[in-house]
Length: 129
Image 1 (cartoon, rainbow, N blue to C red):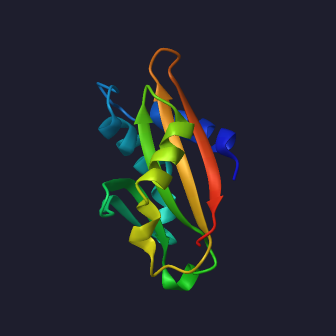
Image 2: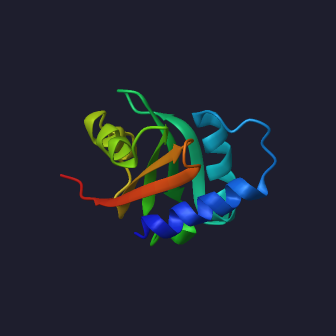
């Protein structure tokens, strides 16, 4: 739930990879995958999960042995706004793609601002209706 710490970790991962061009959402997605590489032990990671009203950029679904961990729906933005990413998750009902998941669920919006060369992250708990 610490968006600032997540953003710092993503900044660090960004500095550690050799990306000739860091100028689009796909580049950001690669950085996110590196930053959360360790999570593959605990999660099934799905990129571009079809949701019916679009595609969730990245979803983390806990493996059966780690069902106590929260699932996460992540929306990436490039030169926009992390809060806007959260709004998009809600407006396009991306969480509906996880309708069979019954544990804790987090929504995360991650943005990269190319002018100041910094990532921002907003995290919210999602409560199913």
